[in-house]
Length: 105
Image (cartoon, rainbow, N blue to C red; front, top):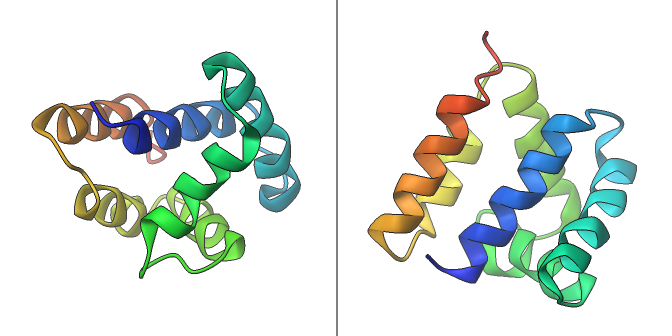
């Protein structure tokens, strides 16, 4: 599994657990995931923005995708993540995440 998908999914899992204002929320969850993984927060943040381009150009683009997912429309976020998946493990991790974090439930 690629670091990109693993780090992004871990951020999403934290955001799922701590649903709050998205921008401030992302700013709090990225360092938690980075610390857990033993990497710099900017490394994880880079996965959420630059490495999801061209669909995501800045943090608020990622936040908008997350807001749509939390609002019951996971397709845009799911599509962006799958478009950037490198391996079959990446695709399976993404599918599993969305299966277990269904906002329509």
